[in-house]
Image (cartoon, rainbow, N blue to C red; front, side):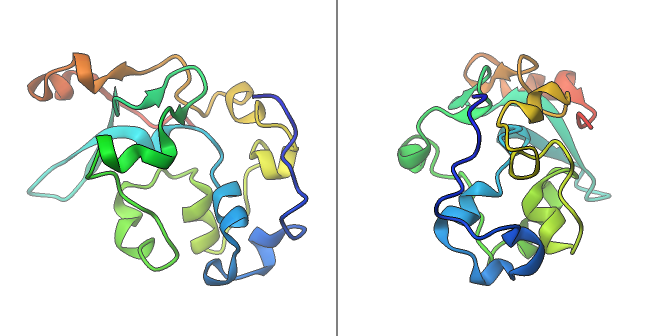
Length: 156
């Protein structure tokens, strides 16, 4: 995971000067920093609407790489997996991590120095300690009734 980002199909610093709706598929996918936080199960307080993160990960998350182990076919195994697009991002902001590049760009903010598009190194998100690498347990082995026991603060 320490290979530099392949920039052959993306425009320079596209995230800071091109609207999300105008990104190519490659650019859109490159915005993902590989932290794995979006693959963690969240709990929402019905009264307040507050969303908290758990360390209980989707059964498809590879805890070592923080990537989906079956990304192209994930909906065959996890039909409820949310497809984030420029059209759906606003409706899904409540569960996106604070450090998520999709969220940051949508809000007009800069990417962090550890984002692979900035650092040129996919390992930088893990080196910065903001990924969930090595922190998760699988939902396949954790009953939903126990998820509250695994609430965590977002790794920042």
